[in-house]
Length: 328
Image (cartoon, rainbow, N blue to C red; front, side, top):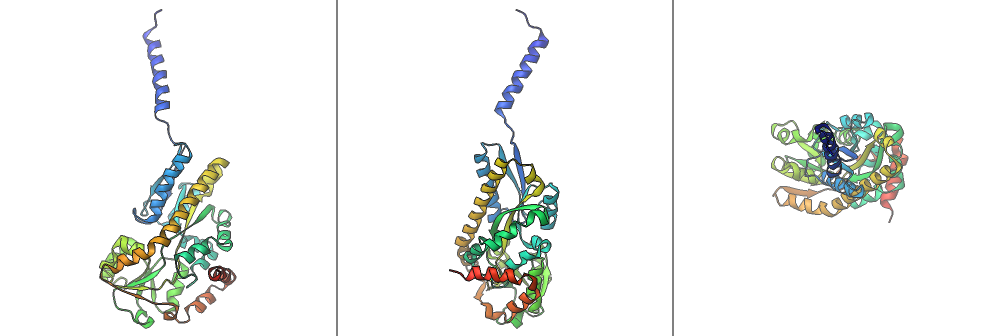
């Protein structure tokens, strides 16, 4: 039997396409996840772990592409992308969320918790989890669960022995109201600034100090520009795992369950890692030779009552969270 050249070519093309389809399957979903923190940060490690776990759970069909260090914009821009569906997921601080849903500000109440373990306890509580349930309606995003960073501290390029030493000084903060109010109450000048600019700003006088956590001190080597660290633990610093509401609506029930379970597992890993690693991070900072001192709530006289007066609308929620933190 003779076959024409055309039939042979057609048969060969179909066979080749069949082999290619089996040899190189494409991912059903490649979720894009953005963060603002540097590549080596624990939040990005969790995102990479999520990629591996999701791929395994889906038989290689699903994965996560991670965009760290603000590659997709600042947090406000990423929230807008989540709302339009241009971005699938993000691990974000709750700063921009608080700007849009003020009740989240209760999580930043001064001296709400003593340490990361206390923060993890509060974030797992019913009042904190209930806040996440409001996000689809109020922001158009789905809040899967909380992560955390290490506790907030104060780092300066000058000695601090008393709160008066900070009066009038320019303090770099995350740009949102809970922190602005905290420092305004104390007579300190809150100065919002992107983290990558802070290193040089400490040298040229744009800022004198910063509200910061130990991991970022190490990641950005801020100890080279500021040689005094005051361990205050004045605030916890939650992170939230968000999924675009538009993307979420497009998923099947199985896909939603798989994504939710995988992200929750990695956010739990983040919380546990910080609980274990924060003391080690502080010891690494001590090893650089800078001055490290501790200060408790008495260092900031009256700040809790004054802050809660400003945030009076959130006072009932703040009281609930403080009760959780104080419970055994």
